[in-house]
Amino acid sequence: MKKFLFFAVFSFLFLSLDAQQLSDFRSVQNGFGPVRTLERATSDITPAEIQFWVGSGTNEMIAVFYWCQDSAVGLAYGYRWNGTKTIGDMLQEIDAADTRITFNITTWINSYSYLDSTFNLTIASAGMLSYTINGVWANGLTDLLSNNDLFEMEEYGNCSTPTNVIPVTDPNGPQLPDDETISLNEIEYWVGGGPNRVILTVNWCDTAIAFAWGINFSGDSILVADIMNTVALYDPRITFSYGAWGITDIAYQDANYNLSLAGDWWMYNVNGTTAVQGISQQYVKNGDIIKWGDESCGIADLNFNYVWTTPVQAVSGVANDVTLYDGVVGSDHYIAISYDDPAILGWATSCQVTRGYQDIANPTLLASYGNEQNAVGQASTSTTDVISLGDNGVATLTFGIPIMNGIGYDFAIFENSLNDIFLELAFVEVSSDGVNFFRFPSVSNTQTVNQIGNAGSVDARHIHNLAGKHRSGWGTPFDLDDLTGYTNLNTNHITHVRIVDAVGSINPLYGTTDRFGKIINDPYPTDFASGGFDLGGVAVLNGWTPSGIRENSQLEINVYPNPCTDYVMIDNQEGKTAILYNTLGQVIKSISISSSQEKISMKDLNSGIYYLQVGASMKKIIKK
Image (cartoon, rainbow, N blue to C red):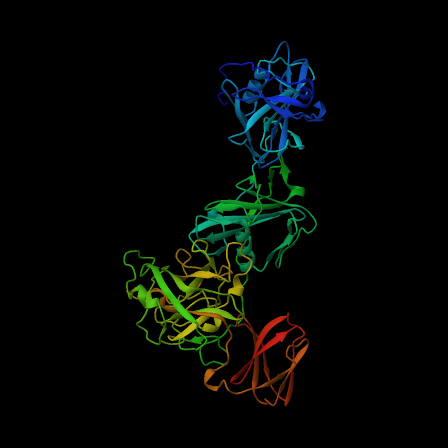
């Protein structure tokens, strides 16, 4: 119970006013005497609306306390008593009965405040306080109360008196049941990247089920909006729909469930307390739990705090992706850029590295080969002009000019592989402020039954959005379109690129996972000074599209209509293979051309940009 400060009561003198002034003005109590304010109409709240009564007795009245700064609201209490009571007695008893409200009183009322899960109300530090009984200013705290009085207290001089009066709830009312939750150790599917972790849970009602995802992130905190965007980017089973007033639907679909809530109301809480801010303002920190739920099966108290009692299940990773991605340099279709390509606009200008262990399972020696300057400026075909990160090592690079999101690929990362099969892989993250980093959703379709050793091989066609899939001198490109939708990421102003070694162990104790929760298998252990990802440089592209196999790129093909709607025609390319792939490098179609005018259907494809490769030539196709 709060200590109630109450030392003395003073009666204040009246300022002399003529008859007309007295009809228009009333007094404000402060430490220096009465101040005149314009009279206003009294509140029309009735005793039947009061939810919380303080005291007991045959006399009763209503007390309303107003705040007008951030939340323009008045909160109403009921007060009952027998015998003789003063304003001071009433305030003291309300303060003692409700820990949410505090009155700071010395020889006068200095301030008052109210705090619960819905409101955090205070008055301005320079504010003056007015209190009246039945619309007439009071002489002081010793004024007597009468049955059916209306007491009102407000701040004067800073804002208008609020018209929104809300009866306070009973703080001693029924308690909510515990909100069902789940621990970090129970999460099976983690998305995003970084050392900190939060949990996102979603509770549906029509099918009473609740699922949970784990999200990794960098920085001290992260917006709820960016948490949700990460889950949606990584997991194709879940979608969030937005309207003018926020979330309109959260849908989940897999082989067993088809869950949706369009048309109903969603609420969310953080650590069991209803959130009072929108998802683009509400931050969460390491260890927090965010829960979304349909209010129709939630349980709420009078303050609209919601809990859901459906047990929470950890979702598993997404089913294996069987897509083949772009291959190695010189293959029928590849997306890699040479270190000396004229499309490169610039290179990283600084690099800061935190080394990882040579073997994460034997944490004694750190990787030590190379220095940070080796990753600054232009890459080359040299396999020695690099810096080795070690297991889970991190390199953060900055640029003289921010990277922009152009049409095509925006930057490329170079590693020092001796050939096309010994591939040491790394995650890639970007930031537009150096604080909030967001990881590209990656794919590794490599088998996870047998560990790839330090002399093993990786098929580049099974790898997507991981750095290190090409030989020395050739960079793996990245498209910032893959990271759209983040509130705290400006993809047209990327200032930092972060590269995090993907530990290639298939042991879950040490291994790392792709966007679908699958273990990434690459050469492990590489327990020597140059272990882990070997960084040679980061090139700035700001919009680059592959132009086919460069030594024969001057060859042309005739493709029409372009843009297209239902089909494209290819002239005079009999006996060749036409390969169509999307901007992610995924092969969409592979067709053997058998006539001088080959027709390729585009009707079943979504609108967007595609690339058609025939032999040594490449054409960009726009599907309307």
